[in-house]
Image 1 (tube, rainbow, N blue to C red):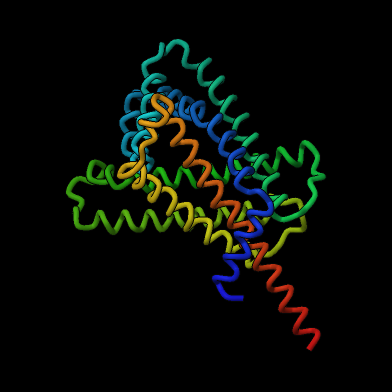
Image 2: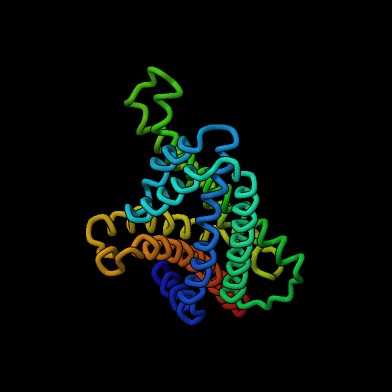
Length: 282
């Protein structure tokens, strides 16, 4: 099959599996964990340094998101940073607990969505399901952490290394984004390989979807941010909820990229199986 035929088949499979609806559910759970996760980051940072520093760093890091979503993130972090420091220990425990609960629910919804995309049953017990969800959560946190470093390191290098040549900053930025892309590919491959409840397949079987999902993720992040900045009218349509809607929609598109990669892997496996059967028949 040609690349176009594989892409068409993957899209048709995704439509039949209602991945748009599945992505919306995953995005909802991810959003529930998002604000508590921000609170946990600021409060943890505040145990060792001025929490306002975390907010200032986040202003650079969050710059890749649409402007309204960035404002929402920064506003939430500023509220936490300005809270009573005497309650930070309790706030940290509550925020981390809520973030973990929301992240696990989101990861479990990813597992369910991938099982549907792979057309497999879901007989895993509670412990197995929770353990796999925790593994997915940790892999996503790792990718996010690398992404944050990739975004924030460029602006921090001149401060950390006085006299660093400005001409080399684009090279460093490109290298860090390549590192992020590689980490994202391996994270997607890990999820595709182990999350569905079936026999573990080889890395070769999940690599096409992992690469495509990463490309789509980067395109969604930068493309959607550019669209909202130039043409979007979410604030005019949704008013005060505009930033929330934008963040939810970005999470939704990112999840769609993940599920489309899974559908592509399934399409490639079916195409390879059909080719093998034709070869045996000859």
